[in-house]
Image 1: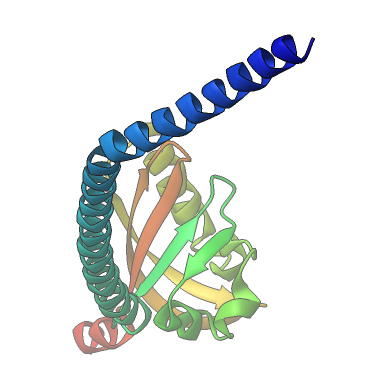
Image 2: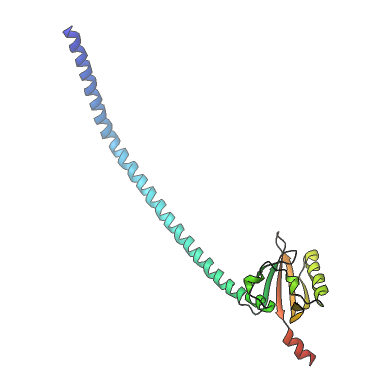
Length: 187
């Protein structure tokens, strides 16, 4: 029996020694492959990181350009010498600039969602309604002259042009105060 045990022990030892040698061979064979794989992966990661940094710089530049354009066009819109209004198909004011608010005699944000027709004098209301109907049916730019007024108080004569745009069918109005011009031509 001791012979058998010795054989088993030797077999176990032989297997253990063989496994150790195999591991050493694998380490020696795999080491250059692993190092080169790691180097390749590091290179790829570094290249990808630089690509991301470059994309980030481009995005930052595009963002800055967009911010500059937004500020410029916001100033142009808000402080234009004429009133700009965006109306829905019912005539509700969705947006307006400071000059438009001044023409209507109120603060800009107080006028949002008000119906623009409330600020047309009673005498001019048929002209405005015809104008407003035409721009929604013809899909072309239309114009008219009306008197702005509120609570039977005349505000000013205006020349307005309007057009309907987009899928949401919003009306863009530009409104110019022509009161002084009319006074000069009537004298």
